[in-house]
Length: 203
Length: 203
DNA sequence: TGACAATGTTACCGATCGGTACGTACGATT
DNA sequence: AATCGTACGTACCGATCGGTAACATTGTCA
Image 1 (spheres, rainbow over the protein chains, first blue to last red):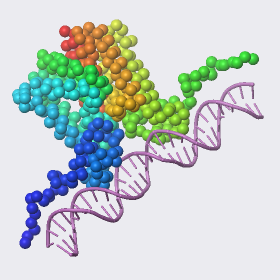
Image 2 (image 1 turned 45 degrees about the vertical axis):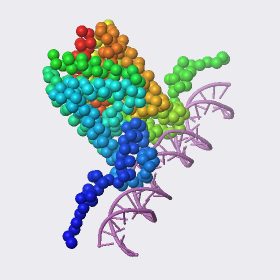
Image 3 (image 1 turned 60 degrees about the horizontal axis):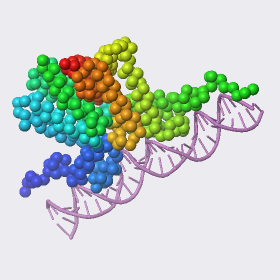
Image 4 (image 1 turned 90 degrees about the horizontal axis):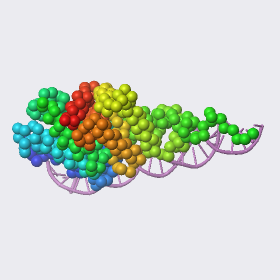
């Protein structure tokens, strides 16, 4: 009999049939890293809250830094899902699509306990450009900027790059200031400001 | 002879004639906390780089948290000095004064190695509202917002609160994004965007 | 000079950090 | 039943964390 390999048998061990512990660690780390910050959370706390032990963590992730980078990759996927959600409700309407995200953000950023953007926070936590988590964050922000240029172009801006930068500044400002002011922070004016900026960029 | 006290003799020990070590620690901590982040820097590194030892630190500061709060208080003083610098060159000209700061910021935020606002960074590093450093930062940001309302009013904005929020979002966005993008980040468009926003707020 | 307070230094504390060597429980294959 | 690979837990590592007790040095007064 030749060598037989069942389809249920995973070729790539870390693809789908991952160890259960790894997934628990992943979810717990995501929650804790986002809420408390990466530096603030030790691996001990992660595995305890996940109900597993440290060796289980280090079998699926090379290091805490690696787990942090993984967390940000997950975060990025979730971000794009939220950001592009308006594409369904506002087809062929770049402005409507963007404003849909901005309205949602304005709401979230004025809730107490808001923690901003996990990717931006990671950049603040790791100033040195050698950290793997930071690299994930930086690459994402460049993609994000490009996406805003696309949308600005679609909106008919005279200078799409300038409008995109303006929007990026407003959004990053919302991520940051949402953490410092309570429920009546400057994000309350975000929608109005964004509309003013877009209007001014079309003329 | 009655008690004589020379003017060169400091009355208040912690005011001017402070221990030399305390001042060295202060400056070193300021530099390191700002560049690397508060959580990233240990007290050992501070005293080593300052050329002193740990007990010298703990005689002048109750704890690392206390030193961090002190750093932010220093940072705030320096911030206001920069922010209000335009008042001399642009008397009775709120817009000129503000744009003077914004132009300077746009320049700094597009230098590689820019680290944003120390106060904002501290808020990101310490999500819990119980940290003394965070309190300093939050109080400052509220003062800052009020100051922007004053300036917006002086500029003749129809809705000063909204313009102030817009400016705050832009500035915080610049602090944050200046750390992720290199020398050609969105802060390059800051001046143009700010002018658009102010113009739109006057009409 | 001698007393005294302020400042500096050496050496250390328990707690926690990220990370690992090693043994074991278990399910599938032969 | 014997075997083997996988997944997991116990117990521990050296390094570093923030913080301190005890001692040496200094400068300033009478």
